[in-house]
Length: 176
Image 1 (cartoon, one colour):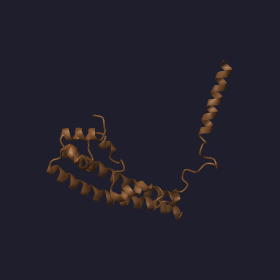
Image 2 (spheres, rainbow, N blue to C red):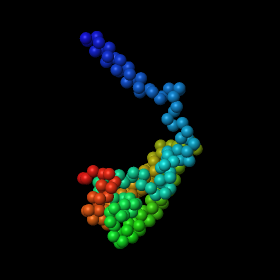
Image 3 (cartoon, rainbow, N blue to C red):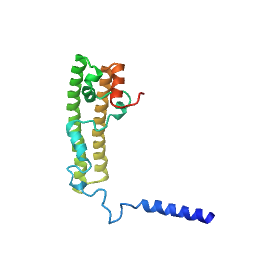
Image 4 (cartoon, rainbow, N blue to C red):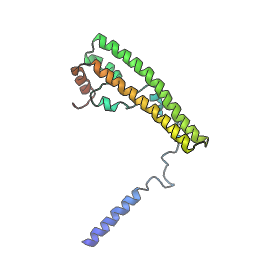
């Protein structure tokens, strides 16, 4: 019995060790193959499109999932939420302001990611340039996320408790 247990344990360990190398051999496609052909290698086509167009890209999930509705989604659900004309007007203005701000910041994210890629492409990377450029990328991304979160905060203040509960239900979220 001990021999069988030992044999099974060794077989399991060998399987785990082999699984670590799946996809790393020369016969397998490399995970980054083709990414060097992207406009900005570190950004997917979906991310680029979202950044150019002020989309949320799930940056406001902490707000969204905790009772702070997104302005664009509120407009999409205006009838179900029974928005007043004033709420509709204010939400439309909020969406317009949010798009403008987040498009501008999104372009900064694209620019900083592009600069970081260019630094490596031109073989100018040093510890100092990496430090500075990754901080710039991080700052741009942080500003974008903060903007999206802030608009959710403002939106929640414009709605009553019933509308927020109805929003959560319409979006398929559990009650808090």
